[in-house]
Length: 320
Length: 216
Image (cartoon, rainbow over all chains, first blue to last red; front, side, top):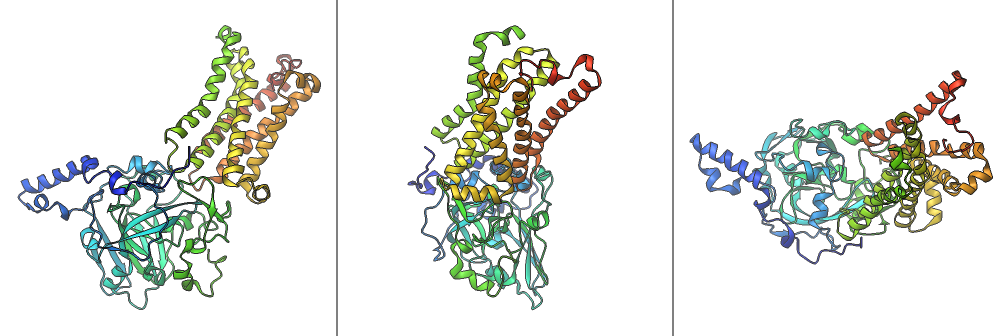
């Protein structure tokens, strides 16, 4: 009774269509558009709704990526109702429950630090940085569960190339939005906000590192990190930071949220590694959502062929 | 209230009520109600209900005294056995669904993982209590010894709370709620014992009915 089969339906068949389920947000957007109209500013928002990025909007995906796994995808429902997004609460169901009214439009991402062209990108600009690809990645949580998700986006390197890091840039620091009004559930969850993450520049440049704007054929749902997030498939899920507002190119290794909270448990690298246990639990196996028994965890989450070279000569038990 | 509690048929609805969490899990299992990670849902739910039944069982003695409901004692064994029932389910999901009955793996886990060690300790200590929960065993052991043995439930409750606190990633609020409840219930016993020592005329809670062994 508990064994769930892979979806026979395509996600496009079961996914709520477009704005239909997002009426409240649509109405809010319509009100904003109406307000703008009354103010005599512009008709553009009304006649060109595609200019605004809303959750559950269909995305045109030109290419299927060779990086995709052929493993069975998890269902849209699993991917959207079992989330870690502590700003909306620490229970797996909290993000789906609490993020419904999260405002993701307008949205901009500030890119700063050791780069030639510091600038702010609107979400609309980000979506045009490179052709959107669908990439079906394995996603392994540090809590020993995993999921297979068809993400939509492109290699983060497209943004890096746009801003041109200087020779001083060695790391990239990322920050999630923290708005106490919209995220009152964050307090008391035991980590500090805003949520911080980081990568070495070569990790950030790696083609697998993805700037993600959608999944399952649509823009990201709020609980999955709308409107833009990272997806780094060979690292534990918490490295794949959600709802990005700031990207800083820096000289030295930046602070990261989970490392700040428990340095012995969550390292800066946090590569998926079945041979390096979390101090409190084993990382040798994982439970794929929808499966009954646990399966072995693969080194670098199975992406070793592509990424192992990044860590040549490093002791991964020390640099966990 | 005492009269209702003393009614011999009342044990049946209480029994069914205690069985409800397990029943709801089964029902949810057949109706896609266990979420994206059903195994984890069952593990967390049975763990939660073990702690809750341990706390309810520990609350019987204080409730009898504070609310003047001595008849509550009739339900304590059942409540304690339900705590044991839920921890058995909890432990079964662990050795089956997490460890696939690899007993060596279980042993390594128990030895290596602090939170599993302490949870396992709490479980093992409950086994003799479940076995000796019958009238025959109270008689065989004698009230005083039986009472001493069954104080192991204090250790199990503490172990259960620590087990929970050590496994959460960072949000300690829920384990803290259990910790507060267990602390209050154990503190009650310490106070009752101290008062009993100071005023021999109004003997302490644990010693008021020494012959029945029903008030540990």
